Image (cartoon, rainbow, N blue to C red; front, side, top):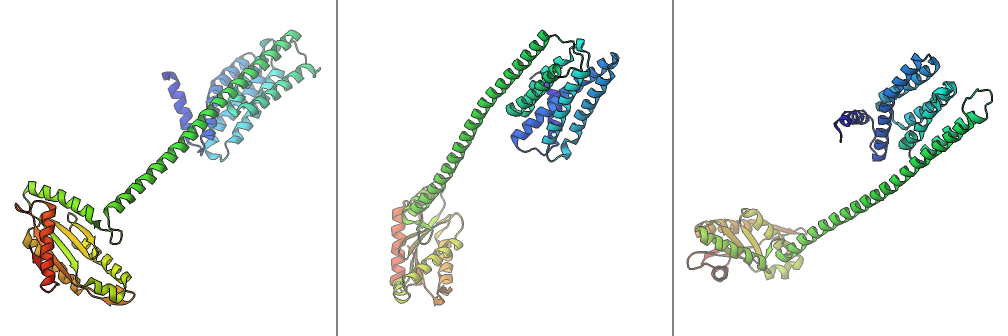
Length: 382
């Protein structure tokens, strides 16, 4: 954009921002109106000066009134809830000014020719339909004064009047067509933009839906549906990765296999819903006991596994024995029924001889088996 046009457009934007126009179409029309007013101010001032020098004071006063209305409209834009009132009020003033200047002006100066600008202004501001209607009103008013008012002494020849009518209607037709053509492509572009926005919105919704679906699928694939902790497959996969990392770093890693003692008796005595309640509460206790870095999973039935990262076998024994005691003292509730359980735990720590998850699990499971055979409710080391 040419630098000379930047400052006037900045002024237009500053004035427009003071209004409460939020709709894009209303905001654009307001910008058009402000631009037309700013253009009309210097033209009106020159017109006033010229007619004042030529002693055409009537015309100078009429144009001065029009100029005052234009300037006032800029000052009250921010105070009006309906800015459209300004458009129609000042348009009426403009049409009246054209007619009065035409009637009162010197015919030899061709004041009537200023009316050629009106179709451009009205269609630019009001759009095709309303702007064309106002332009035709001005045209028929001028023609009416040319032909029907015999009291006025017109010096225009018939040829001039015909040329005036042809040129005015030509300007009106071209301006109307250009506005129609612009709106057609603008509306088409808007339709395309709306279609693209709808498609983008639909695409974003589909992406979000797929993300949620993927999370749900991952959850189903990796978590036990009852207890919402890792299932056996995912636990073993994560544990294998952690063992490899611990081997590289030379840090200890312990695995605990936990089994709820005589869990079948719970199901037989209180029913499977009560057993499910215990399993869910027990899994929650496991998660609360663990650090964020540790991993807990359900291997099936009443058997659980815990991977204690960076934990020696002595530390693991202390942690799990404290956990065993907490569980034995805890009261589980189901439909006002109080239930108590105990757990047996087998622990194994990874090292040079035990460097893979299968061997680690096997040794911890052997320790669990020994704990259950030697009285249950205890912790045994591999």
